[in-house]
Length: 452
Image 1: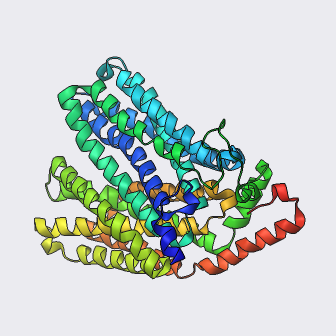
Image 2: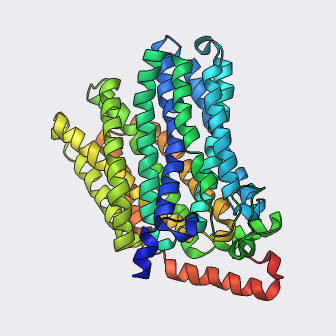
Image 3: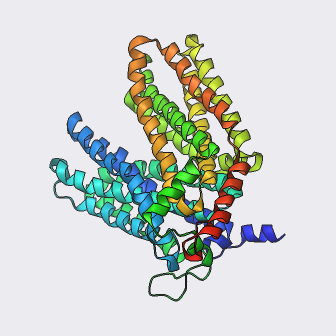
C-alpha cells in the first residue's frame, strides 16, 4: 500500500514521487525534441526548397553536429562542479534549458537566413551545444533520482516523448514556416520550449533543497556524500566502475548496437529509393509516421515490458526478434516488390528498434555509479555514437562488394552477437561490487569526499 501511494502521489521533490519523475523527464525530453525537429529536419528541408545547394546544406548539418561530440567534456564538468544546495544535476539542467531557449529563439532573428549561411551555422551550433548540454544534465539527474525498477519505464517515456516532440515540431514547424514565415514560426515554437522551463525550476531533486540560489534550503546529505571534490577522484572513480566485467561487456554491446543502428538507418533510404524506386517523399512520410507510432508504443509498452520482465530477458527477446526478422527479409527477395511487405518490415524493425533502445538505455543507467553518473552514461552513449558512425561508413564498403541480400545477412549478425553478450551481464554482481567501493571509501577517506 505504501509503495502504491508513493507511485501515485505528486510531490515537488523528484525522489518522492514516481509521477513527478515521469512527468519531469518527459517534459525535458520534449524540450530537446522540438529544436532538433527544426534544426535537423525542417530547416534543411526549407533551405533545399528555396534552392540552396547540397554542399551548403551539408556544411550546415556538419557544423550543428559538432557540439554533440563535446558531451564527454561536458559530463565530467557536471560531475565535478554544482550548487549542491540545489541538487547535483538540477542547476546544470536549468542552465542548459535556459541556453536552449535563448539560442533557439535567436535563430529566428538571423538576418536574411536564406543568404546568411554563416549566421545560421553559428546559431545552429549554439542550439546544438545547449541541446547536448541539457541532454547530459538530464540523463545524469535521471540516473541520480530514478530507482532501478523504474528506469526502463522512464526511458520509454523519455524516448517516446522526444521522438513525438521531434516529429510534431517537424510537421508544425514546416507548416508555420510556409504560412507565417521563418522568424515568426521559430518564435512561436520557442514559446513551447520556454514553458517547459517551469519544470526544472519547480521540481527539486530531493526534499529540503533550494528552488533557486537565493531561496531557503540546504544540500541533501545523500548529495553531499556522492559529490566528488577533484578531477582525480572523478577519473579514478570512472575507471573503477567501467573496468568491472558487466560494464566492459556493455561498452562492447553499445558499440555493436551503434553499428546495427547506423547500418539500418543508412540502408533504408538508399535501399528503398535506389533498389525499389521510391521517392524521398515516400520514405520520409513513412519514416515520420512509424516514428510517432513507435514513440507512443515505446512510452506506454516498451518501458513497462522491460520493468516487468527484466532487462536481460527483454533484451534477449528483442535482439532475437531483430536477428530473425532481418534474416527473413534477406531471404525473401521475391516479396521485395510488395509494398505492404516492405512497409511492414520497416514498421516492425523501427518499433523493435525503439524498444531495444529503451532496454539498452535502461541497462546503461543501472550500470552507472551515481558518483560519476553523468560521465559514465555519456561514455556509453559516446561509444554507441562511434558505432553508429562506423555502421554508416561500413555500408559503403559492404555494398561495393556484396548484394543487398548479403548486406542484410551481415547486419543480422550484429543483434545476434549482442544477444550472446547480454547473457554475461550481471546487474546484481555489478551492484555488489559498486557497493564495495562505498564501504572501502568510508574507511579510506573523510566523509566530505567519499564516493557513493
